[in-house]
Length: 360
Picture 1 (cartoon, one colour):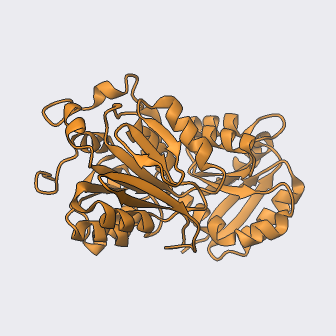
Picture 2 (picture 1 turned 90 degrees about the vertical axis):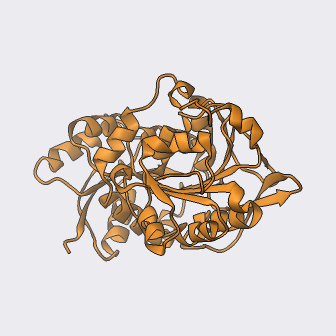
Picture 3 (picture 1 turned 135 degrees about the vertical axis):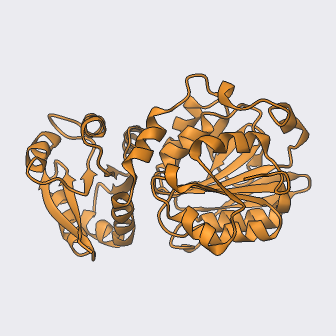
């Protein structure tokens, strides 16, 4: 199999040099060229187009967001954002993810070389995942956002009213590559009465707070980065913080989350497997597990555990996934009751059927 050709766009010569060295040391990846800003990059890419672009955001002449939007209109290409670990960096990175970037890698303001060498596995996963991304699915998710959010959801006999009758329902969602856009597409279609939702989205530390805030600003449901002892309630979406695991716990008749440190599980922290496994133990058949677009197999074993305790388990279908990796692995393990397109998932969440009443 041919190497994945990577193009680096960053205004720092040191960053370009270090990134080139690290990426070229990863099997299957080759840096074909680099440029100090998007205008130079466009000229170079006219000669040979890359498979993946690693893009800085703050640059002279043309910033990364402007370039990204132009790219998605004219020549959709998988883009991995290379962002600083700062609050400002997190905010603009969320704008980039919303504009169509596939994933994030981080860079510190000091000790760059050691940091990027230590992040080699994460970088490899991000770039290889981006290379597999179906840009058409990403484009559909970013362009088909509802104008009136809650009105789209089916409000029939299993609609909004039933949410008050089934507060013990909990929805657990796991996603990775392409998930930021997919989650926005789903959550913006939910009414305030949607059941409580817990989410693991693979994302570097320091970015999940900005991601949660962005979602909260465009959703009818409330979205926040989870902290330990947060109660899972209708109308509330709790996002696992980057760099921490999130577990569901039962406290009497209530569900609460526990956020804790721990080793990588299925190569990730937060891990979807950890969330799904704890949900199977705390909620059993009162849970619905949903595994969405993403690279790798995190969540597949946990979803099988949910399936075994009688919970309804659903995978996003291949056609609507940016990367059909995690859902595919879950299907292969036999822990999936059915596959739904991205546009069908909001209805499932609102109606929250039991496994017995789910037909697919």
